[in-house]
Amino acid sequence: MLPRSFQYFAPGSVEDAVRFLGEHRGEAKVVAGGMSLIPLMKLRLASPSYVVDINGIRGLGDVAESQDRRSLVLGALTRHHTVETSPLVKRRAPLLAEAAGMIGDPQVRNMGTIGGALAHSDPSGDLGAVMLALRGSVTAAGRGGEREIPIDSFLVDTFTTALEEDELVTRVAVPASAGGTEGGAYLKLERKVGDFATVGVAVQLRIEGGLCTYAGVGLTAVGPKSLRAGRAEALLVGKRVTKEAILEASAAAAAECSPSDDPLRGSASYKREMVGVFARRALELAAGRAKG
Ligand SMILES: Cc1cc2nc3c(=O)[nH]c(=O)nc-3n(C[C@H](O)[C@H](O)[C@H](O)COP(=O)(O)OP(=O)(O)OC[C@H]3O[C@@H](n4cnc5c(N)ncnc54)[C@H](O)[C@@H]3O)c2cc1C
Image: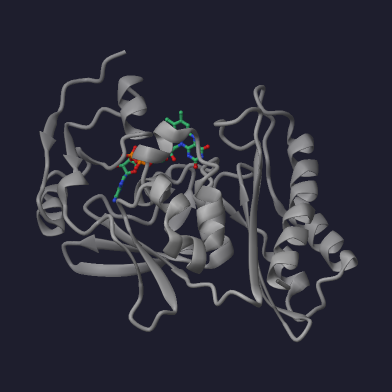
């Protein structure tokens, strides 16, 4: 199918984009990689009157450490392929790089962007769970200036975020890994290579002096949005990451997700079972990596 006709606007700056979005509130849609928006428009599930192409705005694809080197900051237009292959991302946010490499296929990874993926808030998208595990944040520019939104507040519901209609995601930040004591893992169950997740589990751990001092666990495709497995995290912090602790935490993750039956990827009970299995494996892998 062809999309309904629309007017195309290619702003040269964030300010121009935000102004245009404000002038056409509710009628305009930002396009970044177009990997989700264009199919929706072709199916006529979205029919914006204006499409705001932000690909010409300079600097939105930059990846850098923050000044204090505690965070890794990725411009909203950073492509999944860059996240997957950038030496800086691999070193300072290896969990993000690992997950980006599992998104779709090479074509999708060459076009799709981190800002677009998060703004889309697809519960089956891989990066939401990773952002939750890392406790990252999204910065949005609006007419009143910029605001930084923690990922837990940013992801509101299925295809719904905390973004206002005239706001643009400009960058995404995650705490930079110190290496050594930190380890993460993203594991994804998929029907075939390139498919969306049946379930996905993102884990980030810090283990110091034998004790877990940080645990982040995010879940993909088992709820209305990417979910934080808060009970699983709480069960790990302050403890030794033993086989028993891992089993207890993975059972908690399985208990706190809310999957639904679907004819393509299986029943809710199957997915819940798989969350338990994949959480255990991801925790084992992350703990091994944290211990070097
Ligand atoms: C065949 C296929 C397979 C895929 N498989 C996977 C997969 O396995 N895992 C996965 O996670 N994803 C998958 N995706 C989705 C892919 O990751 C997309 O790249 C992503 O969902 C959207 O990113 P985008 O840059 O293409 O956004 P777009 O399609 O351009 O936009 C998506 C939405 O976000 C909004 N938006 C985009 N950028 C901004 C911004 N900077 N500020 C405000 N709003 C913005 C748009 O208005 C739109 O509503 C797949 C897509 C396809 C087509």
